Length: 106
Image 1 (cartoon, rainbow, N blue to C red):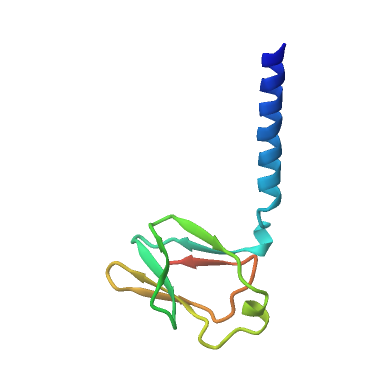
Image 2 (cartoon, helix red, strand yellow):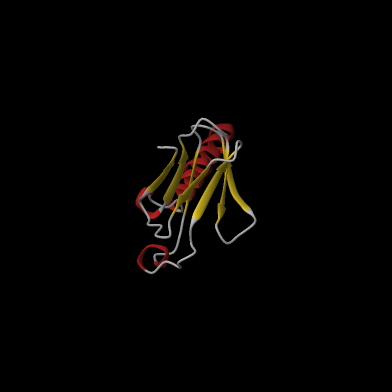
């Protein structure tokens, strides 16, 4: 009897944890998506920065959350640049809006 209560309690905690973590996940329309449709791995950086935001293999994607101002009142140099292994560059911006996607290579 005690064993079944422990199992039920453990299962309840797992379900509660899953529900709590899913409630914190942003909705699709609140994110900006970067998807690498090129045939090479690309590194994504801001035009004004030196730090790599993300390296994406072909077919791989990543989602980012941005402030609304990145869409409504973007900085002029708020441009994303993806550079392939062979040096090909792709740019996106400066307007980055939630619910949209940058399809690198398309």
